[in-house]
Image (tube, rainbow, N blue to C red; front, side):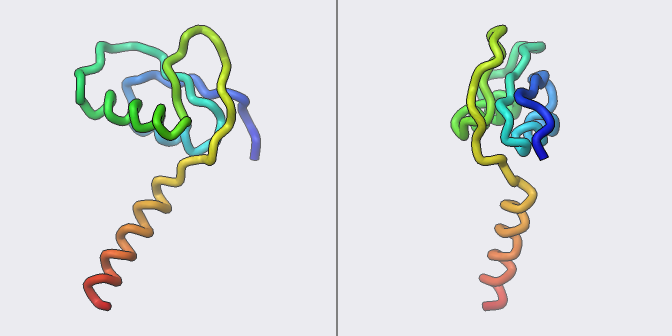
Length: 88
């Protein structure tokens, strides 16, 4: 279901950013706090940028759609693979 063309998200919540990236709509990260280099938020936002899901908000609503992230599905597949490796 297509609800939004763009999502604006604050940089202080990993959950909001990951959930927004599951929409396929461009996610624009609004700066709020100085990010600690190498900290969890900085790593998450860098990962989302690498996947084409997020970009720092620069006042423009630009960016194309991407394959929505499915982190829950990815985590479930990893668990099932590891269970299978132990019993297989």
